Image (cartoon, rainbow, N blue to C red):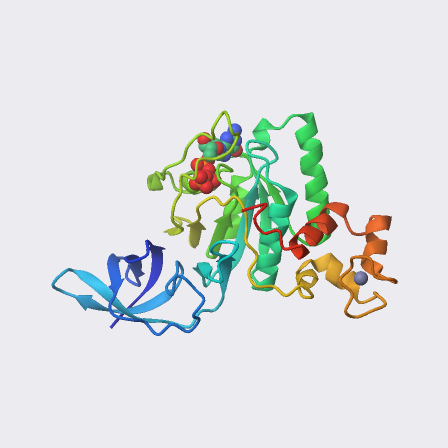
Length: 308
Ligand SMILES: Nc1nc2c(ncn2[C@@H]2O[C@H](COP(=O)(O)OP(=O)(O)OP(=O)(O)O)[C@@H](O)[C@H]2O)c(=O)[nH]1
Ligand SMILES: [Mg+2]
Ligand SMILES: [Zn+2]
């Protein structure tokens, strides 16, 4: 029996890294015991698997997925009851955003952050393409930076074009398993290529017309870094379907809202227009940023499709 880590999954075949450093293609024979029925992919990138070598085909047959330390899920589609594991056994997630080309909506950021919060995976924000920003964009960047830093999410400015702050990020990712997520075209794959030019992964200019990325990366894939650690590059997503959160649970994952909610008069307060709501009061005084509150309201509203 061999043991390895799944680097990539394309549905029926898996690229597995063995402890010695070799890479083997594996498949699954028959049915794996699936613990969670509503998950579309029983084996995900980052999973540790046990497999038998099939000498005939020089490939492996996965027989078991070792218990996960953690994982991060997103909904397959809004209406679907099924979820997809984006990756398993991760130390931290980085959300890469850009102020322009493309513009990352605040609600998109918040959907991602509450998901990370729900799965208890530390999240940090990378603001890329700072070389492109004019005065207005810089103002906007500073606003978001202040807003997220205040509630405890570290933000890092980056320009992959000018290679600014690359070393800081490298230090953060060294010897860890990091996942990078974000809209298509923000520069996720470019970051991996900057860290390891030998990877030579495919990237593309964003479209002139739509000012959006072209969904160049199509499957999540984990890459070993020359400085130690792994980075999981993911396909750009337009939106982030928040998985199965109950209405009265959503605010638990907005850190600053949760903190203040204990001062609400009613303990079943949803912070809409209930009397004695401390959250609404904090929004009025500016202690809670209106943009965050607006994200909360939209997510509560269940409008998952808007940012998909
Ligand atoms: N000006 C500028 N362009 C950048 C920077 N980083 C990346 N780009 C460009 O942005 C475009 C998109 O980069 P990708 O790395 O393909 O983006 P991605 O996030 O992997 O996109 P998907 O795979 O579609 O999700 C490429 O043309 C990059 O050269 C940067 O810091 N500044
Ligand atoms: Mg990419
Ligand atoms: Zn309230």
